[in-house]
Amino acid sequence: MKTNHLLSWRWWLGMPDSIVTEKPIKEYTITVLVPAYNEEESIKETILSIRAQSVPIEEIIVIDDHSRDRTGEIARSMGVTVVRTDVNQQTKAKAQQYVLDRGLVKTDLFVTIDADTLLDSRAIEKTLPCFNDPMAACACGYVIPAKIDSVWERGRFIEYIFSISLFKMAQNHIGSVVVSSGCFSVYRTGLILQTGGFNSRTMAEDMDLTWELSIKGYRAYCVRDAYCYPFDPPTGKIFIAQVDRWYRSFFQNLSFHWMELLKKDRKLAAFTLGYLIDGSLFILGTMWLLLYSLTHLVFTSLAYAVLLDASIVSFFTIIEGIRLKRLGQVLLSLPAYQITRSVNIYVFWRSMWREWVIKERLQVWVKGH
Image (cartoon, rainbow, N blue to C red):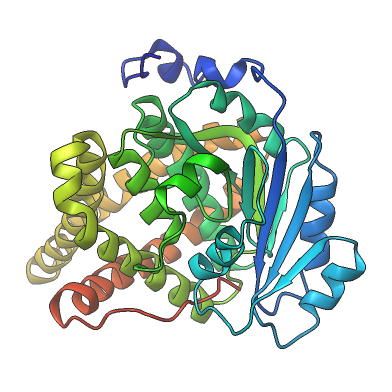
């Protein structure tokens, strides 16, 4: 199967890859895995959204990672399979692998979904045509916050729709998706078992597995209309902790996989290097403009730079907001993005300093709510 490339006319017109518009070549048996630790407030809604899927689900397995609340009890009362770990596994990777290692997943495909994430009724169905590609290992969906109320949720909303609609779709069309998102992904069971499953060597098992599969020649897809709705951080403290984990996990994965990426997957290496350079240069450029403006008592340069950046983000997110029929939410959320982006810039550099300079490796999983 030929890999789509950046010059694909479908991409420039905002259309999905032709493969995801096809029908699945077969009927797949599907298991859904829900790793959960102290998720009694959201587990019921998550299970209900899985039950409402437009395709049959063979089994729902809630992995109760030694919760201290009623997570397992609530899940069990809803008639799903509950597997409780002997001790808390510390990371989502280990919790998911706990089930895979015991041979409890016997279906063609399995889905991983966070216990604080809701699925659109057709989310899983929309990913199935991707597996018409024999080299497809996994497919993820389009992420939109379940709640868009606080400054942090609004800023994250803009982050999602800007990065997914522009950058992740570009990655998708050249066959190098940087990460099949852990909040909702569908995997080819036999292949994942064959390659060893989820590894806990970094704090981002989703990125680690995506890169591992890509290096071996397999492909991850991102499906633009397979919607999932995680409960994102409602406060600044939780937002910063989650972003810190994301960035530090990125640096961990880059340290671990960089040489293999350069040798075996230069497209993915280019995307990851571009992401690293973009983050670094954007921050250094902003610092230089700010210093220049202050020393010359002229703020024109900084103002122009901020205005240009805001215009680019606004243009693409407004178009995407119209497509999603969420234009009002986009317009109300754009100011919040400037706040969350400033926080992201600070955390990016702090995370790089901790992981690469002082070698203070993150080893504790931080939840996003």
